[in-house]
Length: 253
Image (cartoon, rainbow, N blue to C red; front, side, top):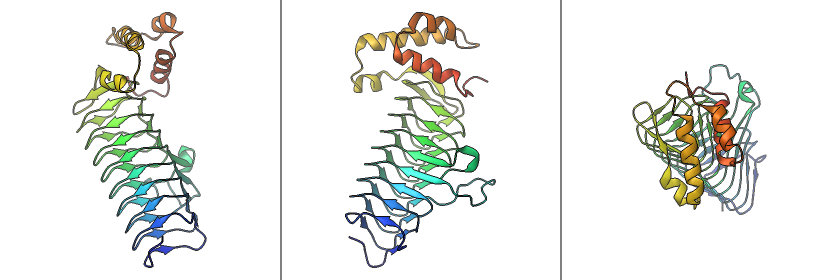
């Protein structure tokens, strides 16, 4: 059902099952798949594709121009998956030519009031951004991450899967997978044990991760990748974590 006051460009591709509330605006290049609900006063513009069973709350702004001074109106994209909840005043921007031209959001995420996903970000599945969490441009947030309220993630920062970041944090360095971090400038505190157990990770695997991380960070100056890789190279989660740390890292200055 589409409310009579909604403004939808006739070129937009909107599935017949989509609900659009009063005074919402949907642009010509927008695609919205079945059973998605767009409530009142939502703006969805640009080259934006939204999947199935999403719920978008009032005053969200999706697909408008990136907040990047280098952006000059080039054709870029925003893709949002299925079963996401996008709460009031959330803003999600498309990509830029300087970052691959696309911003991508996975499935089953919750973005609480006033969260912001900047240009060229990649957000995985089952991610929770609490109230007023901004992601800087090119941030990479992997699956099952939780970021507490009023925490800000600096541009180009990577947060590994199943990590948890406390509230009021400034995340200026990469966060390893399965970790928990908090503080005014987020400080690694160890493994996110609660999160691992919620995901039904076997205790033996948690022990392996714990031993590996102790080995990685036993030297305060720099992580001990080579020894860890030799000892734990057959453990996929440890291998994944060391690769995360060795990538485009600003985790260690």
